[in-house]
Length: 123
Image 1 (tube, rainbow, N blue to C red):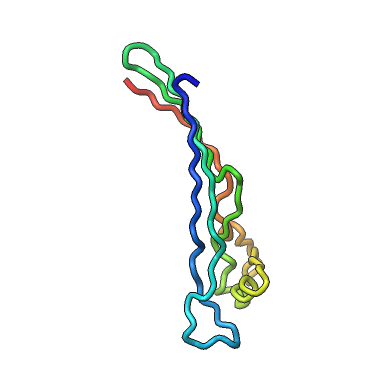
Image 2: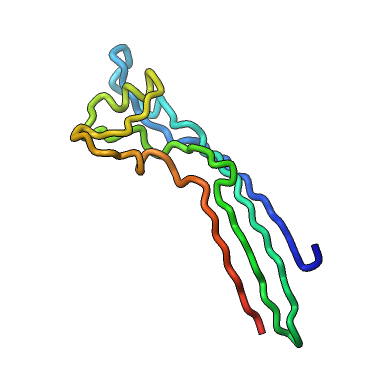
C-alpha cells in the first residue's frame, strides 16, 4: 500500500488487587485477591493521499478492543449488594443488578469494540 500503514497494539495489564476476608482469614490480610488481567488489541490503519504541492490528506481508522474482549471493571456494587465481593471471589459471579433492581451492567466491563474514523488535511 503506497502511503498506507497498519499498526497493532496489544496491552496486557495485571488486574488490580482487592482484599477479601474469608471466615478463616486473619484480619490483617490485605490484597489477597486480584481482578482478572486486562487484555486489549487495538488496530490503526492510515492512508496518505498526496494532492498537489505540499498538500496531503491522511485518512485513518482506529479500532479499539479489536477482539471485543470482556475486561472486568467491577464485580458489582458492594453498597447495594453485600454479597457482591464473596460471589465474585468464591463463584466468579459478577453482579449485573444492584440491590434496588437497577441495571448496573454498564459499569461492570470496560468498553467493547469501538470504531473511529478521521481525516487530516496538511498544507
